[in-house]
Image (cartoon, rainbow, N blue to C red; front, side, top):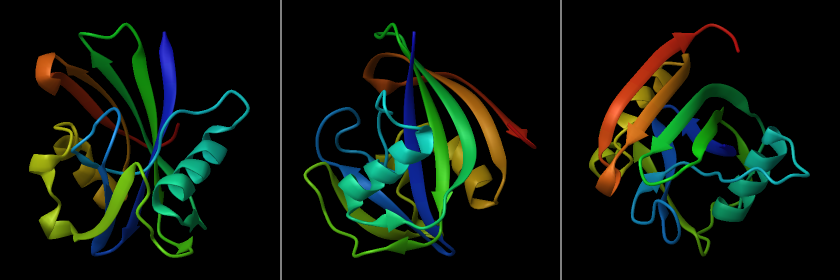
Length: 154
């Protein structure tokens, strides 16, 4: 079974907006903004809603840059995450109950406080590439296997 999720990173070179996850899945990790796609939503509608709920802003542009599958040994579902980039937004970045947003210079991305897969695909993201990948995690979110390829189109 697959669960469809979204992830959006606000990237204004040389800085990237990440959020510290304050509750739920991934708590205590820096990440982009996103979540589950509701049955009545498109993937793009979902990512727009999630960014607004978690960071208080409305993205003006969305570019799909990746699709990542996450497999966890303690879960039966595969998480299919559609990764988006946005450069422009409306509103004031605001902390929510779920996320505490913060800008980082790309030289200071806090990889040690992020999901371990981010080290692999983030360089492709930052260089404007499109990608697909599969990441398998074991206990304590330990990365067991990874496969990542650059793609031209979906």
